[in-house]
Image 1 (cartoon, one colour):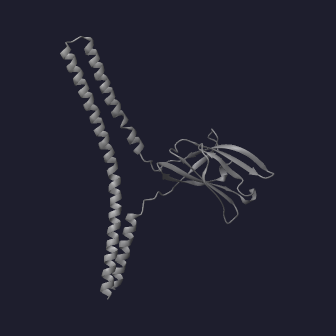
Image 2 (cartoon, rainbow, N blue to C red):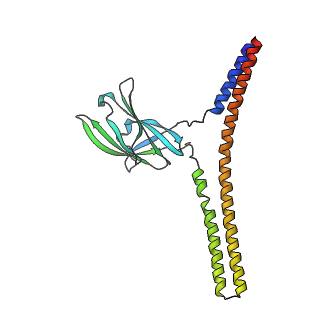
Image 3 (tube, rainbow, N blue to C red):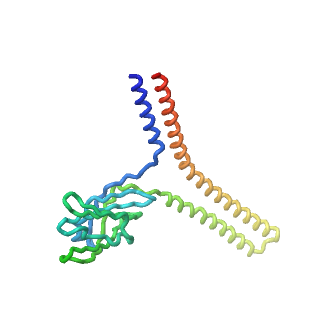
Length: 252
């Protein structure tokens, strides 16, 4: 019984180690959508081909949307194809058939926003029956959709600080120029110019220091996360070896 409990403990510690070491993966989320006539709110005649829901995953700070077009066996194999979606060629295109012989066309596209309509171009060809090209629009229900990483937005917010510093420097230069037009004494003019230059230098130095501190603060969490996973993996391995040795020598 004791040996069995030791074995369970070792397996549990191995599981913990694997959990800490393995990288996090994004999970796809199902969202519904409407297939509309291009530029209208009317349902497209091709709406019945599109399987709901679509699957959405977050990858590289963007949404990767995977859709499925299903056509009946009697319409021949894969009569509907996507030539363009969201201004790009469809990605990860796969053609499969289900047990009933129906055709499934899977494809993906990448976007940074699903709040606006996504436009696509379709090519439909049923031999000796129908051949045409259509434009179509998709309207996605974004409720509950995970937000994208806001690191880009945080980076852009640092720009006003630099602009403010430049504005302050320009204002100080204007004040110095305005003061010089009043023709003060040579000693006062030199003192004002020296003070302006010193203030501008201190402002720029402070701005650079703040930017460096922000960059350092942004990098620290990633380093802590990396070391946390590494330490967790090492602890799991040490416990695994120690527990195995304990079990082995206790048995003998």
